[in-house]
Length: 199
Image (cartoon, rainbow, N blue to C red):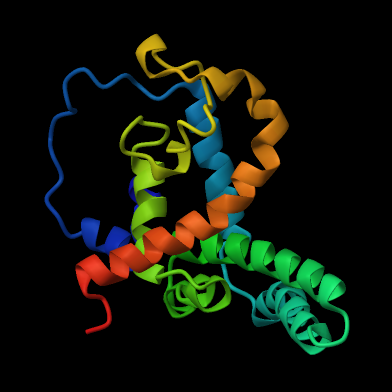
């Protein structure tokens, strides 16, 4: 989690802090699998897999932007095709924005608003929501990614909170999940309003 939430610059700053002379109590030794993974990651870093490449970034962004451009150009004459292209573009840009929020370095910092621009979300709301999801994954009442009840339950709820229609949720999952995009926009606008992010 430390590396996932901090930039290379922040990780470098850690090297300037004093180093403890004793190990923390109760922390188990790394397993052979963990040590093997660390070695594998170090090899990938050494081979340049973590270095940004301008042509790879362009090749990743181009299809997403092309979907938005094509969908926009076709909107007046071929609404159904345009809707399909814009939906795929929106989904693709969401995953790219996800990677930019997790990414480190100047490029990712520059591209963090990409999801807000292409999907209409507040980048502050998205970043906070998503970082909280990774810091406290699937924690009931905290992780917004699993707050879908009483419409859709990801596991059997406490009997006191159960609803009669839960047994039919496999039939109505598609419409419920399609509402998720509208709910995210509502939550995003609510965050902008309550936090006064326009200032």
